[in-house]
Amino acid sequence: MIKVDVKVLRLNHRRIRDARITTHVCLTARAFGASGLFLDGDHDQKLIKNVQDVVKRWGGSFQMDYEKNWSNLLDEWKKSGGEIVHLTMYGEPVQKVTSTIKKSKKNKLVVVGGSRVPTKVYEEADWNVAVTGQPHSEVSALAIFLHLLFEGKELDLEFEGGEIKVLPLAKGKKVIIDQG
Image (tube, rainbow, N blue to C red; front, side):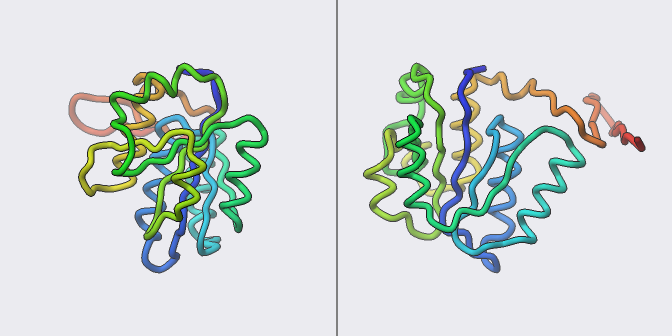
């Protein structure tokens, strides 16, 4: 797995309309190897608490933070030497550009949009990356991008410190719950 820190910025979260999809963005980011997520838009303490609860129960060290000013975050990220990857249907094909992105050893901020992505995001991004040129979910785009970025190794991640673990079976369900 590449040895850089990857975080996600979820732009323009709307608490009433986007709670479910943003939760899925957070869960996908965590499960597919990102170390944390910045939430922009409505300050949704319930969503943040729910994701923190998942981390507590299922393990790992995924960090979730509210970011009031996404523009400053982009500026600070770049100033600290990091790079920005914007997932959009208007960018370069993911299958062609991910190998170039992997070559850089700089930390990555992966931006996934909400209702409307400001022009500054397109301009500040080191890469505007398209997962197909067709409309689809930011959840699927994030999963596919992280899967290619981490070369599939994220599928073998172990999440330490959790209370719940699923044991893979061909049929049936086996869940271990640590009563610790």
